[in-house]
Image 1 (cartoon, helix red, strand yellow):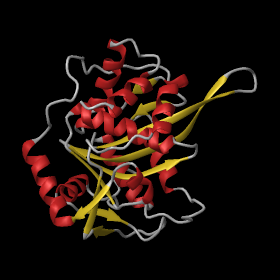
Image 2 (cartoon, one colour; image 1 turned 45 degrees about the vertical axis):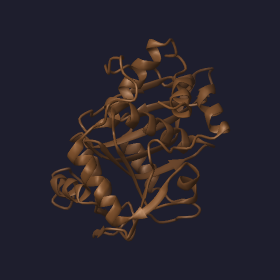
Image 3 (cartoon, rainbow, N blue to C red; image 1 turned 120 degrees about the vertical axis):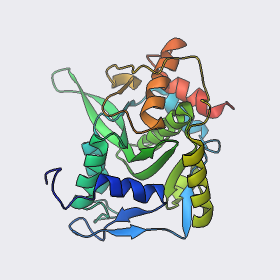
Image 4 (cartoon, rainbow, N blue to C red; image 1 turned 120 degrees about the horizontal axis):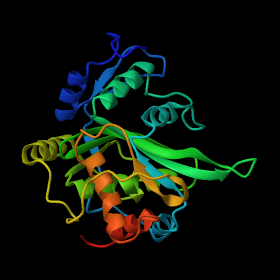
Length: 273
C-alpha cells in the first residue's frame, strides 16, 4: 500500500484523535475499516511509579540486549501484529500499519527495539530482533500502542528504556490505553477516562517538564547495538522520546558507561531523581 493511498488514516486526523484521547483499532488483521476507541477506564504508567524488579535491574546491568530507537519501526509493528499463541489475529490491520508507518515517517510515531547478538555459523555475529514497542509521541505525551517479546524480559527492557527516555526528555504522560497484568506488575494504574483527559490536556498545555538529568548534550550517539550497546536512528521530531533517548546515550558516555548503558538506565530508574 503506497503512502499516498487514500485508504490510510490521514496523519493530521490521527494526531487530532490522540490529542483528544481517542485512538483507532480494527476487528482483524484484514479488516479495511477502523473504529475509534475512547475507553471508560484508561491505563497509564506514572513515570515516577515505574517498578523495576531486582531481576529486571540485573538484566539491564548485565547488558544482555542491545537497544535502539527508531531503527526498525516496520519490523516492530509487524512483530506486534504477528499471530501469537494467545492471539492468532490482531487489531493492527494493514490499514493501521500503513497509517502508522506514515506517522513515523513524519516523526510522530516511534519504536524502541531490543536486539540479541547471536554467534553465526562462520564465527560471525548476527543481530536478532527479540522485543520492542511502538507508539505515538506529541510534546510531553507518549501513547504506547503495542509491544512484543521473543526472549525473556525483552519487552520489559524496551519499556525501561522508554520510561528512562521520557523522563530524560521531560515528558509528563505515558498512556498504556488498556491495563494488563504485565503492565500492572511494572506500575501501570487504571484511571477514569475523564481523569485521563485532564492529565492529557495538562501535559499538552504545560509542555515538557524540567529534565530529570541535566548537564549532558542531547546529540545523538550511535554504535553497534551488540553486547548491550545502544544506538538511535530515524525520525526525531516527535517529542520527548527520541530526544531523551539520545540524551541518555550522552549521559552514559559522560560517566564512562557508553559500553554498558543498561547499567546507567538501571541506576536512573531505581534511584529517586
